[in-house]
Length: 128
Ligand code: THU
Image (tube, rainbow, N blue to C red; front, side, top):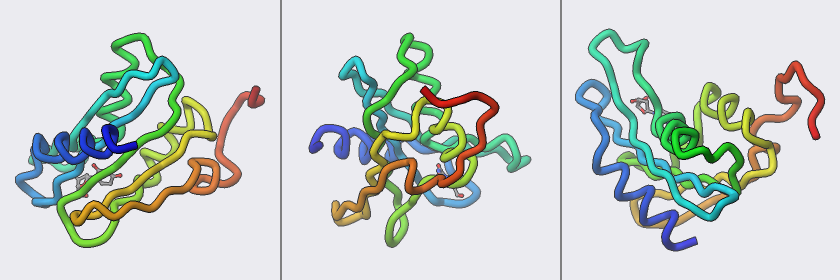
């Protein structure tokens, strides 16, 4: 638990967020036990901005990992950065049973399953 949170906080420091000044770091743990990190990367034209969670998913998939146990998200602002709707949908691609842990700047945490955060998730396929 400690390592995934530390890595999410470290990833936050790598954020490229010159427009919002809101830095986010995510670290996702694969079923293979490996940890993959990502930060948010913004664009001057805004729309192409990628969130930390989806960046971390990209790192994992590039390593051949497509199922996850948990994801930790740390941010630079006050309070907690729960994954946005787009990231919830993208995470759901890889299973609804993963734990989502959010970390505030003092290191306090909250957690919910992705299933709780994305009820009645859209899919074109049966689960299982
Ligand atoms: N952001 C994330 O990285 N993850 C989320 O789940 C929500 C939002 C980023 C996108 C943007 O760079 C900044 O936070 C402010 O919205």
